[in-house]
Amino acid sequence: MAETKRTRDYVSCYENGYNGSGTDIVAGYVLKDDATNLDGVALATASTDTLVGVSTETMTDGMTTSYQMDGVVKVYSGGVIAKGDLLTVDSTSRVVKASAPSTTAQNYVGRAKTAAGAAGVLVEVVLFKVQQSWVGASTVATRTALKSLAAADRYNGQLVLVQEDGSLWRFNSTSTQVEDTADELVQTPGAGTGRWVRADKAFVMKVPCSKDSTDALAIETIPAGMTLKLTAHPWWEVTTGFTGGSSSAIGISTSLTGYDTKGDLLGGASGELT
View 1 (cartoon, rainbow, N blue to C red):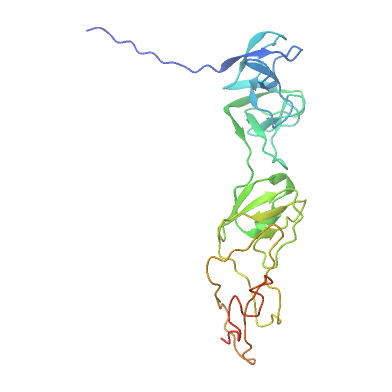
View 2 (tube, helix red, strand yellow; view 1 turned 180 degrees about the vertical axis):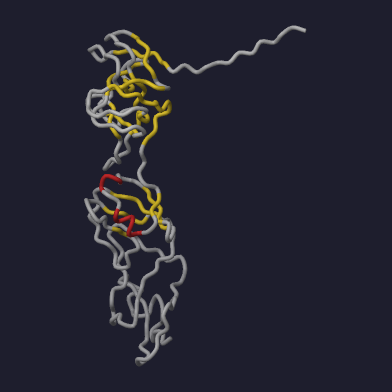
């Protein structure tokens, strides 16, 4: 019987890149994609660059040279780095500890295998073969926690789910919208600029009122740019029984023409007594 030989293929950790940047690239620096040249690479200078790997030998200008895109590689540090830190790139093409960006996602180079006590130190980095991006917090426990997200932990267009009520919020970094009365549509961060705007396509809006609510009190305001569309009739949810007093009638209306008479939305012309 003939012997069957088995072979195993290993994926290469290296790729060929053309350096058309106008200057030689020495070993130990982070590279980005250079779309102006076929298979082009250049020195990465921002965390938002499309990161492709690290130079492991001098890449002569105008020549094609291999660089490392996977595995463990030595890269120059741009500052203090601890073992295990997630790393991105700084303006000098060196690795630095990744931190949450303020307005957009940042890309990771990899994770530190060794530490650096200062800039200019060669550290071992486990590269991420597939570029990974920071996308910000995806869930928080409460709306208070949503408001407490630091400016560095949010970016324009970020979506966050609030676990306590299942509400979905989108961050608008340029909005100065005033919060609505019921706190159901707009949330103002505790620090920094921008607003969290409700992103749910449909939801049950809970608007609180009490025995102390005065006649014609505005219990909810719809922010500019938003439209309230009722898909079901409003209803009362009594969480604390009304006792004592003189049985005041209660009704809800809006400022919209046609629904602006007291009781038009709920309670009728004479209001609800219970």
